[in-house]
Amino acid sequence: MFEDTLELAENKLLLLYIFDKIKFPVSNNQITEIILENNFINYFTLQQYLTELLSSKFLRYTSESGSHRFLITEKGVKVLSLFKNRISDSKIQIVDDYLNKEIDSIKKEVTVTADYTIEQNNNFIVNLKALENDSILIDIKINVASNKQAKNLCEKWKSNSSELYGKIMHMLIED
Image 1 (cartoon, one colour):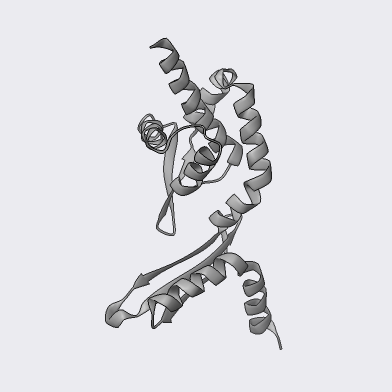
Image 2 (cartoon, one colour):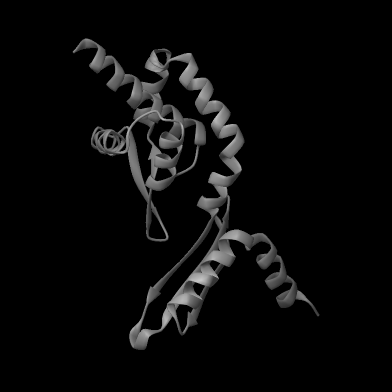
């Protein structure tokens, strides 16, 4: 029983450590990917821990363009600073290595968004957005005729947003 309690505490602290280390809001999918890729916690236990960390106000939700993202609170940072030594060094090393390798990819997912909604008469509104340091660089809404076109635009934006942004800016600014 005592070992289970220690493991629960270490896992919740590990989650707080990850959120603190990332330093920007992340989605449930992103934190799930980090945890599952490193085999720290199973999916269902992770979701339970996230709910508990939210209810105890160690994490909070932030809504950016309609999507919920997790962010560590001051209370969470304080608890982490008091009990960080309870996280095994090997897990900290794994997290640090993973984040050093993947942080740009995680940031890109946060700062570049592409989604779509269905409107009347089977029209789709595609919303393409890019942020830099919480400032909107570009926010475009485009009406397209099919679900396929909407998905295609979203995929292109996510995979090539900086080049597309540059081309759009060049076309708009060019004399």
